[in-house]
Image 1 (tube, rainbow, N blue to C red):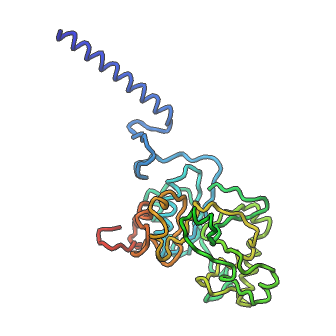
Image 2: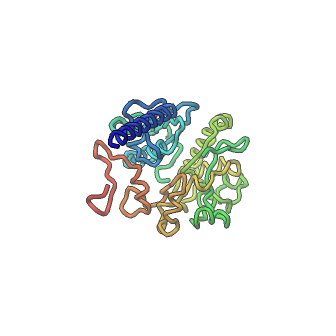
Image 3: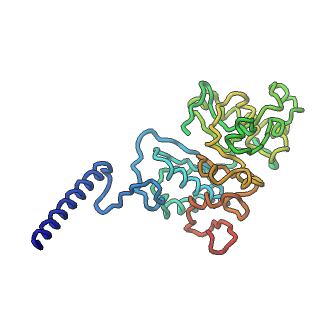
Length: 322
């Protein structure tokens, strides 16, 4: 009887071994880039540190992002989130000032972002001379449209989607309709404005329509005639975009630009479940996720990477926090 039990045990172990070998062959065929000893995750919910780096091929998707020194941590968190949540062949075009380049390079090279494809573009401030005053998803764009934006007025239907953000920003808040140059355009003052915090651009149409020159024209004219209104945040970037793209832009799905997370009361406007389901979060407003008083900082913290040079420090209530 003992001999029979031993033989059965050996047979069982042989069967288990063969099944494990077959499973291993299957996993390797499913993931040919795996190397011996590599952990093969069965779920996509592992932390970024445990995920094997994907080989990203196909058409390059350019993502333009601006990087100011005092907000460099925000840029790093945004890039990490975009990169980890996409399998696309993303190339970040990071526009920054010359005195930020070294800090950015260290942050990219000494963290898990070292394999991320990117270009650092040094912005030359003199390009704006005479154009500003000193105190101032996959989306299919419609034919002939060079860009898409999110509207900043919440209709009854939109409120159901974005949980009552309740913002009503119109053209009159950004442009001075008493000025002759604005009057001649024939725009309606109560037209809903859009939020340029996220722009999806068709670069072919952008170049064909000479959008850059159009924007620079209105920037220069404003420097001479003060065409912008000071009602809404003294914005200098939104007004020329509103003029050039008046009733000639596509719309971004609201879930791909959930806005006003930096406004007062954002924690009451949006539920944690809704924020988790959103595709892209924008903390526009006074309160930023790297400051102490912002809403939903825990979502931002998930993607923040510590500054290896220790220059950037998110402000938290407790010393043990990030």
